[in-house]
Length: 500
Image 1 (cartoon, one colour):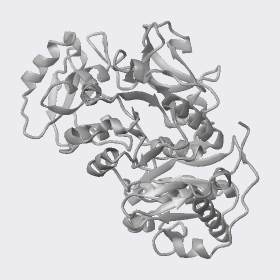
Image 2 (tube, rainbow, N blue to C red):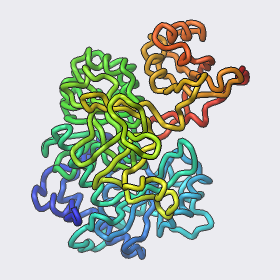
Image 3 (cartoon, rainbow, N blue to C red):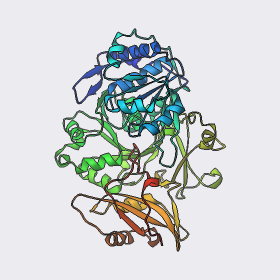
Image 4 (tube, rainbow, N blue to C red):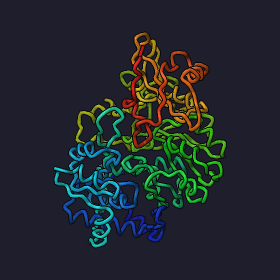
C-alpha cells in the first residue's frame, strides 16, 4: 500500500459511462468519465492559481459533487484539501485558517459571507463554487496528474470537532483511504453495483469515508443530498435506490420519528450501519421490528475511520456491542502502563495497523502523546471485550466519573434512559458533589407530547441500575450542543446550580 493509482482515472478507464454521482435535488447524474474530466480540469484551475504539491486548499460548503471534484483534484496535484466546519462562526474558522494556511478557500452559496469574514486579513482568495468555479473549471486545461499517489502522503485534513478542547487537524493519507475501503467493504459486503447516500457533513470523516469513498473506489453510485432529510431518505429507500448506508444515532432517531417510517419498506436497503456515537439499544430494537438489522460500529477520525463493526448475524445477540476489529486493524484493551487487559476488564481501547493517521497537523507534542511506546494509537475511549472478542464501548475516559468510590460510565446510564418511552434523547455527565465526590446529571430531551418528571425518571433508573449509577440531577432541554458526528458536547452542557 505504498502507492495508489489515480482513482478517478482508473475508474474512468474501466467503466467510463457508469454513474458515479446522482444529485438528488436536481436529478443530475455524473459518470466516472465526467468525474475524472472535471477533477482533472479542477486540478488545472488550482495549478493556475498557484496551488502545488503540499499546498492546502480550504473548502467551506454543504454536500455537493464539487467537493469531491476538488478532493480528487488535490490528489492529482499532491495538494491537501481542508474541509471546514460550516457550523463554526468566522472567528473560529479564522483560527483554522491560520493553522493550515491555505492558498485559497472554495465556498458554496450558503457560506460565502462566512468564508470572506474568516479569511479577512489573510489575503486568501475565495473561489465561488456557484459563479466562478464551474466556468473556470470548464475553461481550464485538464491537468495530467501524477502517475501515483504515495500512500504515506497527506490527502486531506479533518479538524477534530473539539468536544474537549481546541480542534486539531488530523492528517488523512492515501493509505488510510484505501485501508478504510477494504475494512468497511469486506464488513458490509460492498459490491461494485451498490448505491449509497451522502448526507453527513463533509468536514467529518464519515461524510467522506462512510460510505462515499469506498463506493467510488468500488465503482458504485453515490446519491448526494446537501444535508440530512428524513423524508427524502425514506423515499429513496422505498424506491430501492439505496443499497448501503451509514448514519449516526440522531439520523436513526429522526427516521423513526418521521410519519413515513412505518410505511417505508426498509428491507430494500441491504446493509444499515451506525457510527459516530453510541446507538441506544431501543433504536436497534425498533428497526429490528421492521425487519432490518442496524450494525453498530466504532472508529475515529484517527483510524480512518473504520475500526469495529458488528456483524448482522450477531447484532441482536450482542446488542450494545460495536463488534470485532475489522480486517486491517488490531485492537486491544489496555490498563495503566498500556498493559493489555483480559476479556471482561474495562480499559482504554487502543489500535494498531496500516490505516492509522501519522498524526496531527503541526502538532508534534500532541502527535507523540497519541501513540504508546510500542506504537498503538490511544483512542481515549473506554471499552471491554467479552469472551468471544466482541467489543463494548463504555464512553470517553474523560467522561467517566467516580461516585462514592465507584466508576460510572455515562453510556450505560444513557442507554437505560433511552429505553424510557417519554425520552427522545439523554446525555449524562458527572458533576461535583460534596458528599459523593461526583454524581450524575442527566440532560433529557422528551418526545413531542410526552411528559416525565425527575422523580419518575430516577425511579426508572433505580429499577435497572445500581444506586450509585442513578443520576442525582435531571435537566430538561430542547436540544443538545453536538459535533458533526452527533456526539453531545458535554463540556457545553449547563451544570446544576445546586450540587449538594
